[in-house]
Image 1 (spheres, helix red, strand yellow):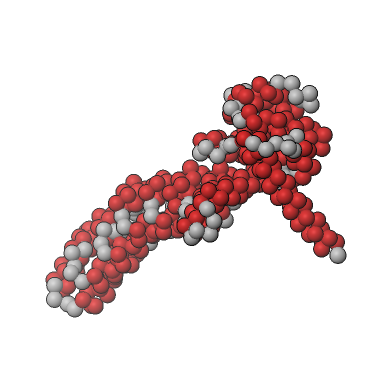
Image 2 (spheres, rainbow, N blue to C red; image 1 turned 90 degrees about the vertical axis):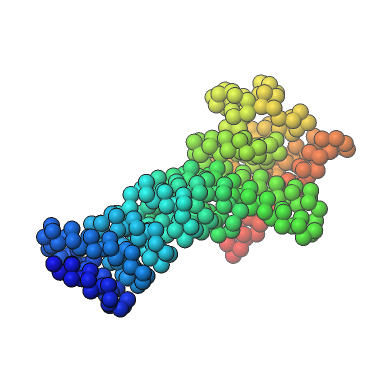
Length: 380
């Protein structure tokens, strides 16, 4: 009877009064000890109020029901299809919405709807995966920064693939401790490409030179990322580099000249198909027996074979890197020894390799100088 009188009253009451009464009705439904008949009547009244011409009324209903796990599903699903200021808080908070409904809203929703769902607490793995796959950059950024999300490594990789060219997305992903190494490297590659394009577009240097510098910077960062990783992480990184076409002879030579034997073994395993135990045995053999066959099976350039062989011999003499820092820095002594094998070379691929080794030697010298002066300052 009371609900019937309420419905007659709302036909003529001002919008502000209707909104207050609607809020009171919803709270009574949620928190009062109503009889079954009264609850059904109250629910029917709320369904009728969904058609109220004033957004004040519908907003009051949304605000009252947005956090309630006993809110009528039919009312909630209609509110989440309303205008933004009504639908957004319901999409962000309502526990009544199922994962399937949220995924559907992500797929067909506006950017603000996707961002609202990305901020939910908690946010399931399935919904996070949908946002990673089709969500706008804003929604993906909200998801990355949401501490209550259950997100997989593959979802983070998909976000990096789709939106990694945006600085805000990159910074948010880099800040995550659970970001896989291969995804971190993919972001580094995107950043290098962006910087290369930026420099070339402004004609600060030729595009080819900008690309070369960017590639070398990316290779340096990749070797640093590989340092100190466990076997599974290193293997995953190598597979990513192969699939993305980044595992070049120059990158491998840099890793070797940095003393990162674990990365080198995984790379030869992936490129040659030889098992890890055999590859490790060949690379650790001081006599060099079997290395040429392994090198050729990996499909690496013939012109760089001598550089690899000499660098490998130098590594055996100087010892392997014992920590992450050691495996990420070029070894100046090793590079200088390799350089002596190419002095006087003046043409073809060997000339290119000689120039590259000279640049690596200069880089190693700068790194040594930085750490030396840092140690002097620390000691002082």
